[in-house]
Length: 95
Image 1: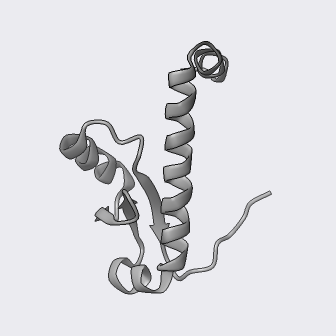
Image 2 (image 1 turned 90 degrees about the vertical axis):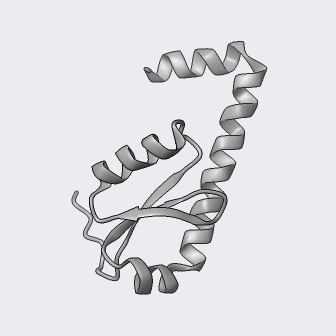
C-alpha cells in the first residue's frame, strides 16, 4: 500500500487512525523494552533477530525471512510484532 493510500485511509477513518496509533505505541514500547534488556538478549540470542510482542520475546531466528514466515504461520497478522537484530557488534552506517 502506498503512503498516500495509507494517509488517506487514516484521514477517512477515525477507527483506522486509532488502530495505527495503537500499533505505533506498541512498537515503541517493544523497542524500549528491547533496549532496556539488551544485555540479556545478547547473551541469549546473539546475532539473531528477535520478535517481540507485548514486551516479550515470542520467537527468534538468525534468518529474518525465515523468522517472518514462522511468525505469519503462527500468528497470521504480525503488525503488532517488533523485530530487532540483536548483536554486540558495532553498527556501521553507510552514507
